[in-house]
Length: 304
Image (cartoon, rainbow, N blue to C red):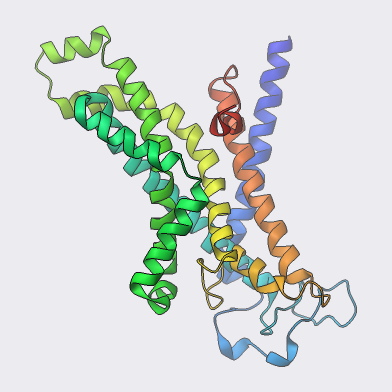
């Protein structure tokens, strides 16, 4: 009975988290149709309408339910378009981490020897620093090498590259550990005796065993990548204000908090928190669905 109730609670939690995430991500996805205006179209922007409050406060403007920013752009539209940018960077960065980490982890685990030692020492060096520190270093180097104009024009792709290169060791070490445990088993030895090629053994027999762990890690990493982008934007290494993400919106309104224009920072911040929370809870619920006896992902990532 207790097991059945626990399973029902897990399913409810999974569907609740999935519903919240689909609501937030879906709103961002259909931003061109849902947003009151196009924040990138300067013809729809009136500078005299800047710093107008949300609809429930005095001096608000019809057509701008969540107010406007310092440039007179509709804040709801900026949030929806900004969430789309943040989610694109988050999913893109995790996809890059996944591809790079899985490839290097499979090579290190299956080949072993000097290649394994070299790749894992490289991973250890990166893991010795925080994700944000690595992203700041890589971002500063890229911005200095190519210039601010290039960085602003290709901001989304560069941030995907920066955050992706900062977090691949987590996937690589997970895949390597799984491959090293599996490659000594009898069915792998039998595949070698039958003359199967190394790529076939790795892709058909070893890689599928790592997928559950990779799905769980990815759920946590998407939220972390979105937060990393927001932190980089706050430090001036993220998206430009002409194509803002949620992090860029938070930064743009930070200087106006004391003047009373709190909505420019707090409302995008709330959208960011809800999105990351939904992603993390969805990943944790999926983990419990796969293996209810494992430690929470957050504890694994913190080393607890």
